[in-house]
Image 1 (cartoon, one colour):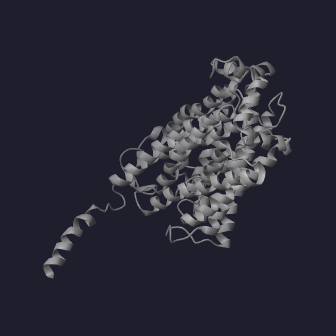
Image 2: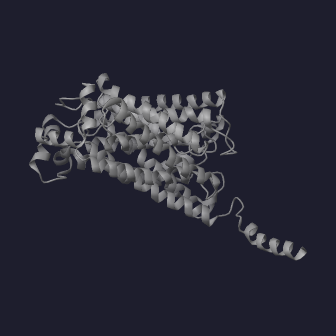
Image 3: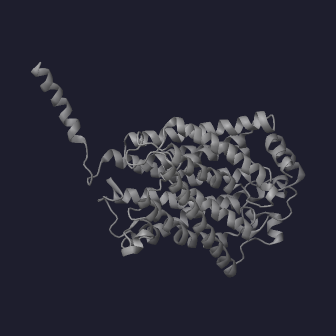
Length: 459
């Protein structure tokens, strides 16, 4: 019997020795974060396909450029300035609101562990993972402005917004000294920092830039439904890293976050598609399924590491129905949020953040709080503060950029298409597609009848 016990102890000791204490690099945790950074990087090109498929053919290249340019501009700014402002220790009392300048140009950000940020992951890996969040956030804003915003104005807006608006919110919520984090506001992977922040800026931008010219209906038909479905699939794939990697370790918490990032979008796609089929159109559209899945991804983002898979399924379904309702009623408001950024990202993220306050459980994340009225109130505070901050500053930045360079294209450029006027390129060599002719709209309507009926009902 003693021999068996000794043998078992001999097997257990190597496993115990492999456990990496905080403050030392763990290869498994590092691998998870680096792979997740690659998955999140894929989300921005995925967003480009999703948005690109939903616009008219004459604007698809321009729409995709607005996503890709964020990878370039925000990436450079993240290295030079934004990472330091987001996560480095601030100066005295200011640390509650914004980081300092100690990591400018990524000085001191290398292979060592940043104990307060990711205790078993190299500092450079954590920085890179967070860079991908900073990149996709302003890209989301472009969906409200496509088909009329000028690239020059958008690039200038993104450069200012990513530093002035994004970095403080990231510091409030995720940095050790951030005031919302210290209060106990929960945002596992970016419900407030990414989605509400971007959605409010998108809503403000749509109001400032104004409606597209010459539309006979409040929302155009998608020119390429397969592009939109492909984009949604790439987003879903990347979102596993977006949420799962936010556990910052190859552990049970990551397993919950990965699982929830499947079940919530699955339930959301089912809820949206079935609502189209049985309540509204008698048809289930590909764009509807894709949009529902995206709403579920958004809603589970703040909750992914705090709730059970059953709760994640409920969150996804509720958010999808709320976003579908917002999409259907938005045109009646006369607001031209081109691709319903606020209706999907704003509505779903708000619900996800609030429902985190109800469904959060220490059984999933011992470091969090159980759902309660107090936690619900804190979540509402985080949502409200982010909305006010992003809305007010985004309005000022749009006005500032508009004073420097025109925000939107002129009549002729908008009519002929932003692809040629802004990039000198065409997505397709087809006069029917480029002209936005009635034949094109007829074929698009045939490809997505449920979408066409939805738009007709909204007129």
